[in-house]
Image (cartoon, rainbow, N blue to C red; front, side):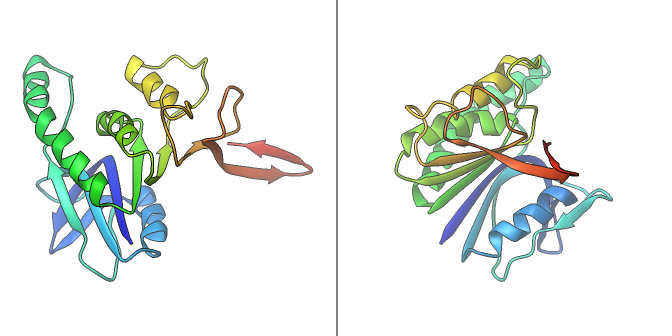
Length: 190
């Protein structure tokens, strides 16, 4: 099984290993322990991993499709990102086509692109981890709202399970609470 991860987390390569933020990688290591082949499409940076970064652990080498960032925080970054967009979309389409399972993590710029591209692959199994606030009334940028609206729409998004923190109203069958705690006799969703 070929497992594609599309992530906005900063990644670093060191001594042939791929590093990223520890809590995220611990979760991904659980997922990838169940698959044969892993491809990670991510923002790849030079330099040393940060203190919280740990390596992915997989029996086979992980294929890394890195890019230098996709952001619209300045005029220069916006121009570079727009120029990068066609290549990024082409690579994403190719990798989604080859993958048996697609997993992307939002909210992030690359996850926004993946949210649109995954519509082209209704037959593929997909998961999305939305690590932001799923509350529809919480003030958020327009791009974050799109990353909630599209996966929440079963007509646009097939074969996807979106993992969110908490249990919220206005959610489709695609949306699953990711974590809940039992405190005393009452259930409490995070």
